[in-house]
Length: 103
Image (cartoon, rainbow, N blue to C red):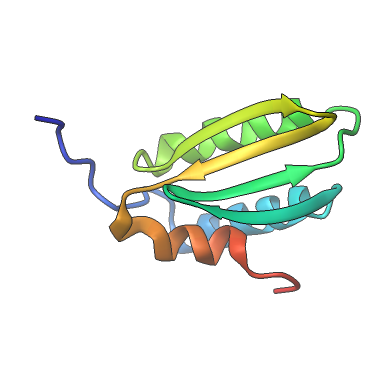
């Protein structure tokens, strides 16, 4: 039986707002598309210098405060792909962070 991971974030409200700004900034760096997947969302980016490393750093830090997230970064067919997953109960959080354009 898999242990349940709580849907909680250890960041303060101010830190959560700053983290969201970090995600917004990275999404502005060549985001091509958002696609819903069975476990969350797939974000496809045009490769640019440092983007993959910045995604890895940001998602590593996000996983520390929100351990229910699952992140995977790949280079596929000339694109950088970020898959974001969460338990069903966490999908609204995925939506708030990644789904809407022009927040």
